[in-house]
Length: 378
Image (cartoon, rainbow, N blue to C red; front, side):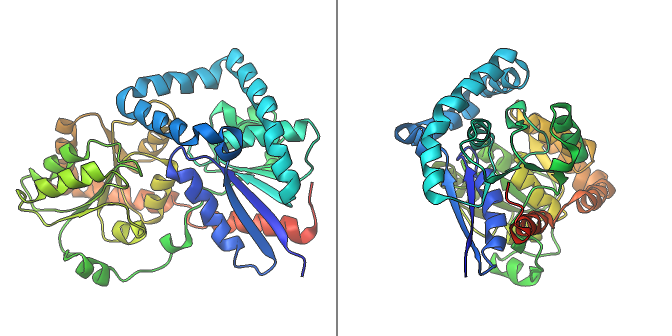
């Protein structure tokens, strides 16, 4: 049996880009004639600087997020930035070309704008003929995602489609599917067993606090605010790979009266979301999509300028999330949602369900399989 090869390309700037690729890969790999592979674009382009680029990115977000926002805005609007982008893509695409030639995939799927640009450059140079796909992992599209050379785009909403069409992306090339999440987020779970595992009660309100894989939220401060509320609540905190924050939170837990569950990196976010009533988090595209699939209202704490602001505006406008800028405002919103206006929490939950797109990964997978089965390789 001849196997079709699907190559996924991403970048390590936030775990969401990787998770989106893996969600689709997991479904494709259920087919006996499909072979998938996921690569980090920086392993080819800047291999010696890979870990330093990621560390620098995280430090900028922690210390000077406004700088990131400025770069994001500059890249989205400056004609000079687009020329710089074109030069970078053309220069580094050559390194990537040899790898693609060796692997010889049938389809190339990009879940980050950087590999999308390099692949588009290779298409423009007529060095590759494979079908090329972009999966945008936010609720907004940055200009550096936009390449008419790519064959298909998968996006979260109609506004993103209209934006792409303004830059000569054909309407038929853009599919509104949502952001792909792992299938276990849409599978039923036993909430009683999960709650019992963590010694939690389903009769009490539960708040899940997540700061992304790097733990970039002021989690200790948020944890303290939640524990200072004048009503009982259960608190689950996931600190990701940030061991220092994990240690600090565990030391604070001894002073708390609430039932708290403090975790580091975990693989069962879908279970934790299932037993939570509210999530306090950054508005990453994947985390937000996972929360939507779990019908989980969000409090977004001080989003970083850039795609986080775009995602926040989308979620707030749909009345799925509330943005807070400081700890005092956080305390007020928690009082409103759990004490003063619980109907608002229910309304947000219903809106999350309405705007969720649980079949995104399946629909993207079916689209790819249809291309392969029909032999419609570009």
